[in-house]
Image 1 (cartoon, helix red, strand yellow):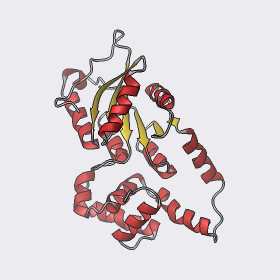
Image 2 (cartoon, helix red, strand yellow):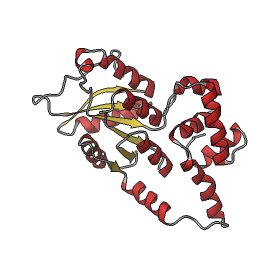
Image 3 (cartoon, helix red, strand yellow):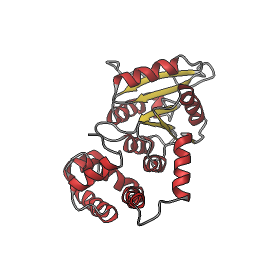
Image 4 (tube, one colour):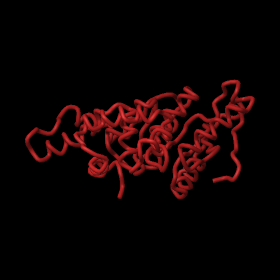
Length: 249
């Protein structure tokens, strides 16, 4: 990551390339995406950062420039990793769009769970793609999202459709597992964020700081998380997150 932040020139007829911001906490992943995108005509990676917090800080500094203060957007597409240290990609997406509603976010994740997709789209993201997708699919997704169109990984979209049309029979082992895991999808956007932070072991005070809400509000969300998931304590929340592939151990 560059030592000093760089900002792209304001968009104009002389600068038609799609401008991209990369947000991922793995250096090698960012390097690979940069090489892929910059080898593609018409796409330029103008900056890369390693956390959601850094992306928010970069946007704040851009908005302090004359162009940013005038409402110019710094990039056409933000490519956002979903699972990062600190605030998640979903929460970072929500906060970025709260500051700059015109930004277009494409999420990339190693997790192929429909609940991630639903929460990302609810946060305002336009696209969701598996990190295992073909490189050319990533390029297509960037261009699609830059046009303001929604783009979903084909396999994930199919899984979401099948899940909605054919729930697992209740009373079977598969049905019980699906019911246990499916409850996460019933959480609201904020409840899902609190759920993820709790699963990672954060305290209510830490979560309040991360999400910029009061500890009392965190407590309310925690109550709803427990009610909806059936988890009795933080350890069971962590276990549920691991079982659903939302948390790596």
